[in-house]
Image (tube, each protein chain N blue to C red):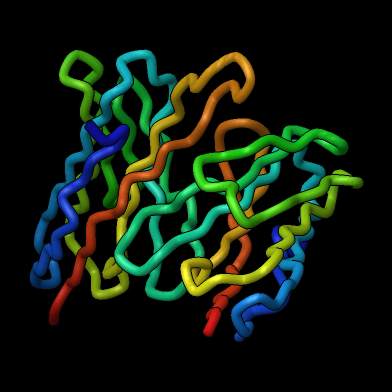
Length: 110
Length: 114
């Protein structure tokens, strides 16, 4: 099993550009999550999903959007990128409590 | 008050030493507790769950004290490969819309030296 995969691994965006961070899991988990982690800081929940077609906001959803059309995929969309969105983004999946993380996407907005 | 608080460290210990980390949580109704390990520039990985009765996995022992609302992680006979950041994670009821939510501490940094 590949587990949770994320693409791209690295990306540099200019201010105002948009992009989609991809996340796919092959463990048939219902729950999927997007976090961001700033240097020296803890993980902050952006959005989560408890199943296909269901998404909800986490702690820091502003500037992001998500969709969940299938169990496997949970893409995160950044519209109008800002320097404050420079961070490492982790996608995770799980069954409710335990979570399994993807390798992360390092995003720089300049 | 933060949901989950940890001493950020760093804890610098020699190989073979025993080291312990504590973590406090604010929500007394928290249900589940975990320690995750995060290596530099890598994703967090589940190290172990923490049960009320305490649990041990090789050199690692986790304890839960519900009355005082803290959990601990003890690492015996530290190895160089134990160097990482250890994240305390608490699962608490958020609200009727969100259900349970995982709250991550900022992590405690451990450096094991030769």
